[in-house]
Amino acid sequence: MIYALMASGLNLIFGVLHVLNIAHGEFMFGGAFVSWFMWNELGFHPLLTVPFAAVAMFLVGVVLQVGLIERVMKENIVVSLILLFGVSLAVQGIGIRLFSVNPRVISHYEGSFDIGGVLLAKSRLTVALAAIPVLVLVHLYLKYSKYGIATKATAQNAEIAEACGINVQRVRYVTMGLAGAMAGVAGSLTIIILPFTPQSGFSYGVIAFVVAVVGGLGSFYGSIVAAVLLGVGQNVLAWKTDQLLSDALIYLFLVAALVIRPSGLASLAKAGTR
Image (tube, rainbow, N blue to C red):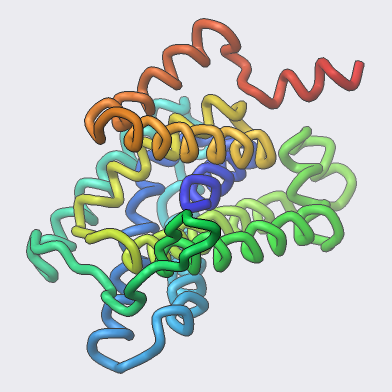
């Protein structure tokens, strides 16, 4: 579910803005540390911090789009790639200066549920269940809301969407903000189950990119399917072998996808409807 939140947001950005957001993981770092601060310093329940992390990263996403990305939209995609890579490094540096490299985690949920002899960690089950409504809400937003329909129209053809009266520029702002909010939620939930540092976001950003490619760049729903496949595959492999081989699966997944199905899982669904 964490991978799904990250990758689907990344695919929204690519589908609407045609930009590969190398700094996407830094939204996750921001969300994680907003939640950690509110839990550690202000005494909030971990799940109550999630909406604050989402709103904070939504605003950061809008500011990033308005202040930087919008200025290079007409340039070659490599320009935005380099720009966002610089943003990523800058955020990591500032994060290390403010929080150090010491890992932080929200130690709130302890113990496991015993379901038919299978032990499910309370923290992981809570995080998974908390992530699902967020994905459902984004789905409903894209399918039924005015801005959601405008987002899909812009992704299909921005020029025609603008000719039909859609404010494409505003759609780009909202899309970057929404993707930032989703990554912020992912970070807010991840720090409940795993230690997080200012450099962790970049690693998760790489995984999100792999999942987005496997699911099909620009496909919101393809990235969710790919995220579930990769997440379950990693856990099963770690259980049967070891963690190092499980981590390698991420990149084997990418290589296999590029060799066998470069257009991603989303193209299989399209082919099946023909």
